Length: 60
Image (tube, rainbow, N blue to C red; front, side):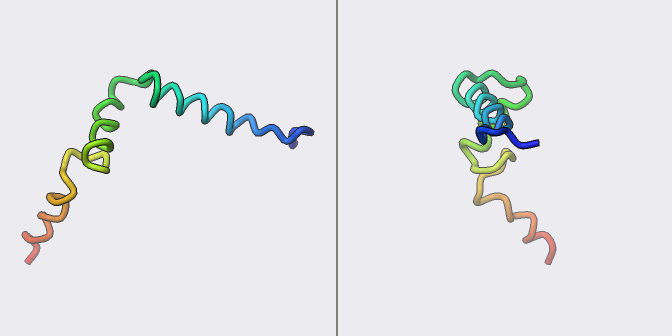
């Protein structure tokens, strides 16, 4: 059932979670490495963007 004043509680919850994770660094410790990789390598992996496709050279 929709809220009569069009308040989307899921959007509010997601904003709060995003704030806690990004601004307050309040997330599980296991996520810190992934966030660091996304910040530095633009992907959750530890490989730089230039090294990601090197495995294809082994194919042939």
